[in-house]
Amino acid sequence: REHSEEIAFYNGGGVELAICSKSFRNVMEIASQQINVGFMLQLFQYTVEYVTVIMPYVIVAERYFKGEMEFGVLSQTAMAFRVIQGGLNVLVKVIARMAALAAETERIHELLTTLGAEADKETVATVQAPYGADIQAEVAERSNIGLIS
Image 1 (tube, helix red, strand yellow):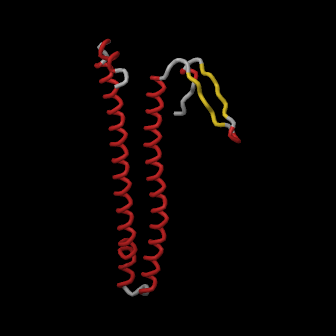
Image 2 (image 1 turned 90 degrees about the vertical axis):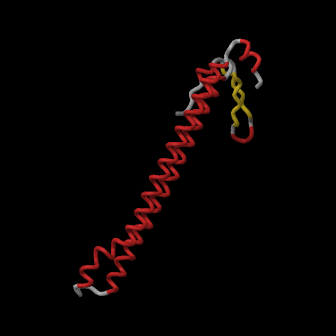
Image 3 (image 1 turned 30 degrees about the vertical axis):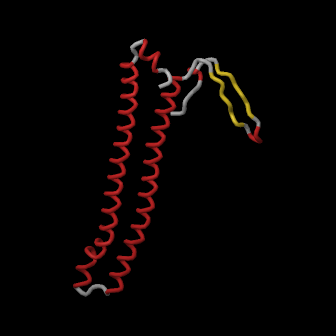
């Protein structure tokens, strides 16, 4: 809105549309990836949860019905599988957090890249130093500033 007259005067609408469309496609791609990863993680988590509930009984049932082991051993086997399930759930939760962090990092990187491309040639950067002292550094060109990727 701020530069709409200049954009219209120089017939820059097409360029602006292309930039906005590219940014929107990137956002949609990242959101789609995050949804897919989240779905796969939930699917894995539910599968592990239900398999660990049923699996000990399936594995040990034959020996129990043959009379080779007591009911207490069957219960201990089920409890051991639940402990393993708890450990795997912690792992899955950490992976889910890491996936969310990766998606957010990608969005921040895209934002910084877009802002870096639109920045003026001369920029004044303010850095918060320890103990509240502000340090100002003049940067001659934006290309000299390295973005974290």
